[in-house]
Image (cartoon, rainbow over all chains, first blue to last red):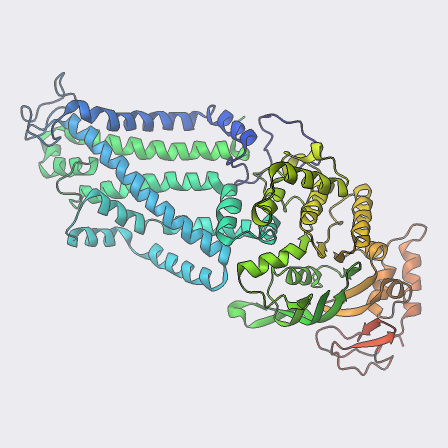
Amino acid sequence: MSAQQVPGGPVPGEGVGAGPGEAAAVGAPRRGNETVYFALRNPKLLAGAVVVAVLLVAALAVPPFLGGSPNAYVGPQAQPPSAEFWFGTTNFGQDVFAQFVHGLRSTFLVGLLGGGIAALVGMVVGFVAGYRGGLVDEVLNMITNIVLVLPAMVVLIIAAAYLEARGILVQSLFIGLTSWPWAARAIRAQTLSLATRDFVDLARLSGRRAHAIIFREIAPNMSSYLFMTFILLFGGAILIAAGLDFIGLGPPQGVSLGLMMHSAVSWSALQLGMWWWFVPPGLGITAIVGSLYIMNVGLDEVFNPRLRET
Amino acid sequence: MLRLDRVSKVYRVGSFGRERLHAVRDVGFEVRSGQVVALIGESGSGKSTIGKMVLGLTSITGGAITFEGTDVAGLRGHRAHKEYYRRVQGVFQDPFSSFNPVFPADRVFALIRAEYFPEVGEAEWRRRIEESLRVVRLDPAQVLGKYPHQLSGGQLQRILIARALLLDIRLLVADEVISMLDASTRIDVLNLLADLKARGMGILFVTHDLSLGNYVSDTAVILRRGAIAESGPADRVFTNPLHPYTRRLLSSVPRLHRTWAQADAELPADDGGCPVHGRAGAGDGSATLVEVEAGHFVGCAGDGEGGPCRPDPRA
């Protein structure tokens, strides 16, 4: 850090030399401007955000116009894409496009809920373990490691198979409660290093309580990291949900991209050459998760000055 | 005011904490109001650990630290600590790490206000901050609203002292406040500490620099491997060093007009063996102190690990 007086105002690249977690932007208008400046000039972030935004708008805005149930038998059977049915129809005459946009909805919902729950649990466990240390850390770390080595997919399959209530919410809850360990470990490591900094001791000398120190002193220093953790958990939750749906353990009455692929395979769409039945959902999942991961790389570059391409 | 009585700190190290590391052993001294006590020692001598124990940031393994009659280790709960910090504050070694890099530097003042003076009005608080900044010779317009990286180390260090002054503190623990500063700002901060001392504040001045310890302090405590090697009035300790370690330290202060060769040549001449047990070196190495003149204590020259002080090979 320079000991010189730097005139105020947003100077791009001024944060060079700051550590990965230090260029965060909460509550700092000047650095906030800098983050926006680089965010708007990062092609990876923009491309990923556009794809996700288009799919999100499709999921939110289109279903009300279609009306009716996405599983209703509305058209001729097994028709390839046409002007009337954009993505064609299934063996039973269901509109694949209607199923697709409804499926996007549940996909985003699962990502938001599952990723959100996982991020919440991971943050609480990671922050408390990293800040408190000692016995609390040992116990939380042990729990984290146990959940980490659980074969999560197998547990999910068993739980989903035996559980009576199989809705999107229950599915999200299960995904959230099994996918947090890596986030907790990463956040714990970051917290450990930040908690030894003098400003944490100074906050304690200022009479701050532990939770205020964690959320108002330590967390803002890694806000970019927390945001990226959430994005990765979001994408991960979508993938797990698609996997569960595909093997037939999704919500029985609902619609999702995974369930569409499940029915496509069950009713031999592959053998019959009905590509319009399984390509859209597969492409949809790939597009969402892939865009999220590319966004993550872009965000990494935005927040970490050392990764920026000048 | 502040009293340390046979204070020890033991860390468990190694796998499963089987080995013990004695960071601080049986350290005792007193800080009175209006007095500066310099805690001098090399890296790893336990001086910062003592500072953190006094501030209640590190637990105490043995002994007792009392501040105005209350046991610091016995403070339980958030409220008791908060009241303690109303009277005792610290300034840390590294000014850049003492500020949260994502917030403006004057947030340290806002924290004090939020926790201790929520009833004080905006204008009144502003006046207090500016007054406090003027005490540490800072221009409020120059430092308020700036980010830590926009300010120099000396400015940041003085903001931290101004922060401590917002509370009506009785004791300031200054942990290496000078060592990160360059020579010109150094003397400013030192003079500031002398001003605070004149106002009746007790200061525990932790440093590894002998000449700085001599400049401001009334009492000097020389630490060696966690135990006191020598302690007493600063002028006595510096003019009449009795412990071989203190002598070696003093002779290793670089001086103008003298080369290392000359300094080395003088060193063996004044080696008088163990100050407690004499040249014979019969001591058992325990960390007991002997009072050689009024208030001037010196410890055994043993290896500091509980081993005996060996006879001086050159004797």
